[in-house]
Length: 444
Image (tube, rainbow, N blue to C red; front, side, top):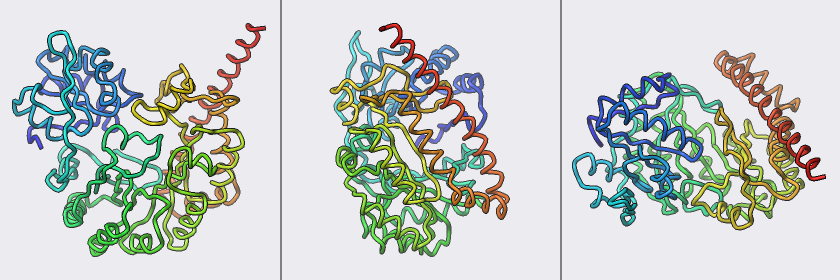
């Protein structure tokens, strides 16, 4: 939307902090999409960039600054202003000279006070936005990205914004994109896919990274009809409420893999988080995917409201029963702005520890009676071990390694990274248990 702009994704492109700071000298405006775990580091880098170029204006966007604009502005003088929630048109208006006072959704300092302008309306016409794939082509090297369960190289793109689901823990619809589902037209999506296939001949897969890609049956089937003639491989997010006919249309249009948020194998916890799904639905959905040959990457969460040792055991057994290709096990995080955060805060469940370790890996932030930091982390480790160290799963991986050289290289790298992460988890568990023992002895 700004022709003279540049997208920099420094870490995967091996651009150092020093090189990033040096680059800032050539620009007038920095827009930094921040996160709760990365906010402090982002503030330090922004300050370094301003020190290098005092005329640089810095805008932070993203969930943490949207939910806590005053706290964020007070945390760093490097931040000149914030645009809350969606920011596309506001950034363009600011870059073209519109004063902050006239920009909806802006938060900024004025006369020693912090001003929060009224919210901006959500972007309704998504087709009016430029194609992100053209920016990828201009500024990024797609071969620098690797997601273990996707075919590499790949690209990600959105076909919608927002999510109608009401999951209490989910960050994006509650803090950024909203619950109203806004859609690109199937023609616009088809045309961008066609462009991407020509622009990136090395690409093996497109990932549709919507909050929920196939929420509405009619829309999904219509889109699949437009994508099918392009004859390409793609993957997407999915809910377990998707029926067989929709899944069949997706498979016939080139869909390979679905990322599915099962979250828990305990029926009460699914109700607690307002998931809008049941165990029976999840099992039927999974069976349908296997019947059609669709691969599933299953997401599970440990530490949701109502969690107990018994409910975690149910979830592990449930995951093993589903037996999907790959899984991810996360620790529930109470991000500000979410219903889960309010629940954890009200019930005094938020731990005083960090949200991530020095390498950016998750640490427990919500603890329950008889489920402290060490035990929650231990359950995550146990979950992965029980799931992947099964004979049928090991043999599944061995077959990949034997018959596919690309998978061999990828899985070897994954195995090394997993064992290193496993070692760090075990170290964390041991340290937490030692601290608990010391505290108990001190109390005695």
